[in-house]
Length: 50
Image (cartoon, rainbow, N blue to C red; front, top):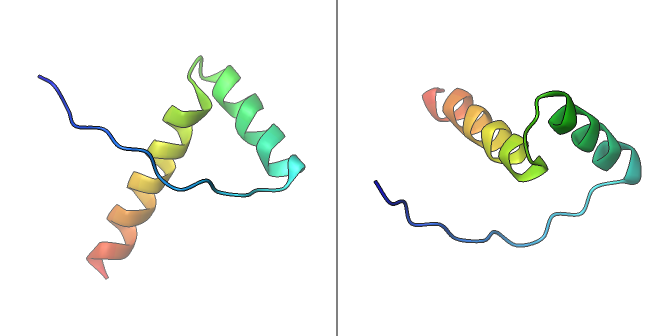
């Protein structure tokens, strides 16, 4: 199955959050982009139900 992919506009975060993302992604053996996509998906799932 192929999925269409696109790029979102850049998001600015402070150095501390960037480092937290990097450490978490590393601990899960995932790319930072994967962690960000999952976080966005979970956020939208929670907020679209309301």
